[in-house]
Length: 238
Image 1 (spheres, rainbow, N blue to C red):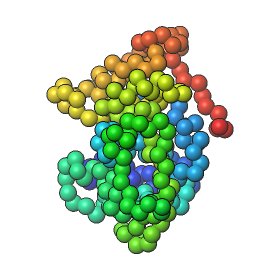
Image 2: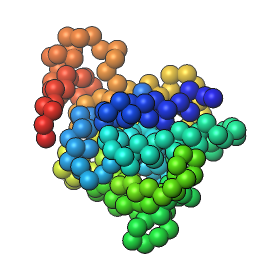
Image 3: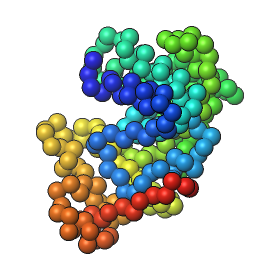
C-alpha cells in the first residue's frame, strides 16, 4: 500500500481518540491560519477541498470534527482503500473518497449526489453544504447521515485555480491555501518542482515558501513582498 493510501487510516485513529482533525498535505502553502474558516461552520461534520477544475474532492485539506458522521465516513474510506487492489491515479485516496461520495451517498432532499463541475466550482464563494445519507457497505452495511462541506476553490485553491485568484481578492480575507498539485509542465515532474512553484507564489504580499530564509528576515520583514512573517498565534476561541 502506498504512503498516500494510509491517509484515511491516520485520520480515523485521530478521530477515534476524541480529537477534531485538520489534515494539510505538505505541498500546500498557507497565507493565514485556516481554522477560523472551519470553526465558523459547526454544522458541517467534515469539510473537504475540491480538486478544481476536476469534478472530484481534493484530500489535501480535510477538516473532520470528532463526530459520529465524520468517523463513519472516514472509516468507510479507510476500508475501501484497504480492499481495492488497483494501481495508478484512479485509485488514489482522493479518487476513492470521490467514488465513495458519488456511488454510496445521496442527498436527503434531492436524492442522487454529484460533485460540482468546473463551472459551478468557479462561482463558489463559500462552502457548498450537503446533508448526505451514505451506505456504509464495508463497515456497518447501514445508511448513515453525514454533514459535508465542500471548500470553495477561490479560497482553498488547487494548482490550476490561478485564474480564480483575481475574483478571490474581492472576497473577505482572500485566498487561504494553495495546493501545488497537478503537472502544469514537463518540469513539474522533476525533483523540487513543487518547492519552486511555492517559491514563485506571492499572495497578499506573502510568499508561500519560507523555509530557506534566515530567521532574521522572518522576524523583521513584516509584509514585504518576497519575504516571510511569523503568523500570530490564534486563540482557541472564535
